[in-house]
Structure formats: C-alpha cells, structure tokens
Length: 195
Image (cartoon, rainbow, N blue to C red; front, side, top):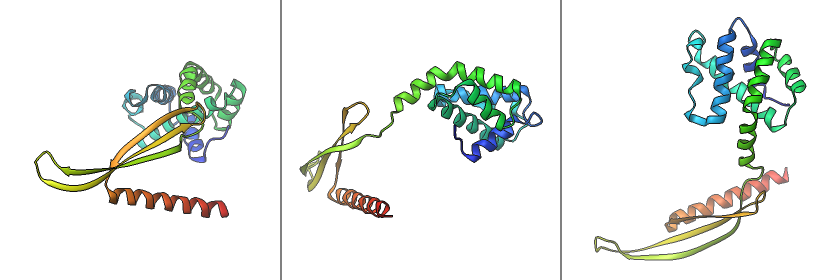
C-alpha cells in the first residue's frame, strides 16, 4: 500500500498520543470515514469539541491522511495484517491500530461501492457531429443574422460500453477557440510522447 509522504506525515501526527488523545483520535477517524461515505453533507470533523485545542490545519492534515489511507486500503483490498503493518510504520500503537481496523471494516463495503462507481477508465470521444443554425430574428423583433453551432460529442466508457452524448451551442468564435485548444492539447500530447 502506497501513501504519499504528506499523508504519512499526517498519520504520524495522528498517532502521537500527546497531540491527539483517545477521544480526539476517534473524532478524526470517524469524521474522515463519514466524510468519505456521506460526502459533503457529513458533519465536519473540525466541529468536534475534542479537537478545539488542536490547530485546524493539523486536524485537516490528519483528516485527509486518514481518508487517503482508507481509500488506498479499500482500493487494494488490504487485509488486517497489511494495514496493521502500515499503521505500525506510522507509529500507531495497538489500540489505535485496532480502532482504525474496526472503523475501516464498518465503512469498507460502502466505500467499495463508491470506488466501483467511479470506474477505471474515463470516457473518450467516439464521434462528433455538428450543425449550423442561423438566427435571423430575436423575440424583440430585431434582425440579428447571427450564426451559431450546435455540437454533439458522443462519449463511450470502455468499462461499461455505455454511450453518452454531450451537446452544446456556441458561436463561431467559441468554436474556433475550442478547436484551437484541442489542437494545443494534441500538440502537447505529441511532444510528451516523443520524450
């Protein structure tokens, strides 16, 4: 299981009993897991009274470290021994490791579903169609003679073989801007692949 250094540093801080007492540790752990499962509607971990004496930046760092660790563990379907070894490397004692494992097990199934819904491959454009619409008058009876383009991208998701359409209207200038940005992206990709 690989977790970035910043998050490992946050886990080291969370493991420190002088900084996070047992109740403060539990508050950060529960808050991080609930925010993953319930999303933004979950009660903020910073609101817990047990965390008032700790700097909010430290609480946020530890909160994000727990979330990253849990997501990596769920992603790799980590067993108890592997998670315990990782947490011991982050200086967790046995009680905190046990509490982490218990909370992880409670939230593992909903997090697996959440990660499963994300998918592994982003959708890609399989087809583009467009048509020119010419606006002659507006509802105020003013003559405008303004062209606009209706563009439709057909997207396919490789994991599910589902097609989805994304469509929008744009002016000629906006369409030229889009084409220019797509050309820039293609050139950038070409340069990167030649390195």
